[in-house]
Amino acid sequence: MINSKTSDKVMKGVFWFSALLIISILFLILGYVFVEGIRVVNLSFISDMPKNNWREGGIYPAIVGTFYLVAVALLFAVPLGVLTAIYLVEFRKEDNLTSIIRISVDSLNAVPSIVFGLFGLSLFFYYLKDFTGGPTIFSGGLTLGFMILPTVIRTAEVALRTVPLSEKLGSYALGATKLQTISRIVIPSSIPGIITGVILGFGRAAGETAPIIFMVALNPTMPEFPYLFSQCNALTTQIYYLTSEAISIERAFGMAFVLISIILISNYSARLINKYLARNIRR
Image 1 (cartoon, rainbow, N blue to C red):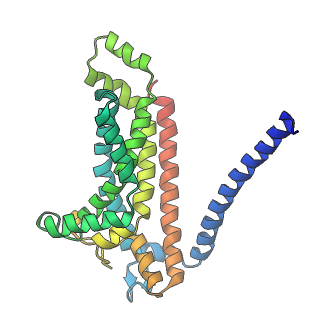
Image 2: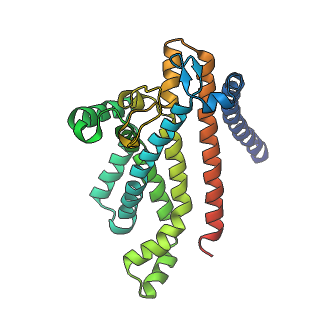
Image 3: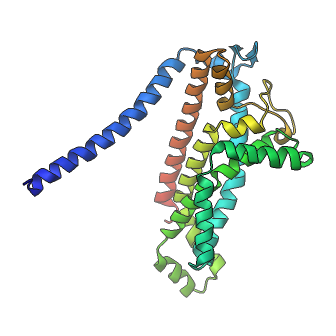
């Protein structure tokens, strides 16, 4: 019979191996993309305009288009997601409607991205074309916003629930109203957690392909003013185009390298801001 010390060592080894396996898979994928992509990445590759149907030149329009799409998605999803989370935590009692809302949010989070693309195509291209302009940055960004909305709602809800009840009761005891307590106590205390949701939403929006293929034309030029209602390109769609058409696998890896670098740098910067706010926002 295995004694408790041996059992603890075995389980510790299993946990250690599981963590090591996850880290190894991550570094294997990132390492392979970096090794293959670094061969073509240089300043001109990032800053120049494409030539010869993206076979030559740079990828600057795709980088700019990616940021535009993600910005529209976040501007739509973050305010709406945070407000929904505040409603669920602060204004709605636990009842059947609350359960239905949470189930709906979780179900929406499980919908495949290609379904969001079809939905966006039907809504923004066929029914609201006069308003959105068809396949534009605005319609593509809103479609991505629908995708990341469940992530923002759930992470914001978790962050709001971590605020100690004693702090809210203390605010009420001092005569503050519910809205004053939410704006001055609850939201400031929850900002680090909300930023985590923004990070997750940014990563998912920047890495999606299917909705953008449906919603945004593969425009090799820079978006024109007014930018929201112009066509654009994105790194993910261009990676798909270069690989599916067997045009240039090397350049596709270069774009993947740039995309992953953008996501990693953005995540790291957001986490630094998150740590700073966690240390200083309540002082």
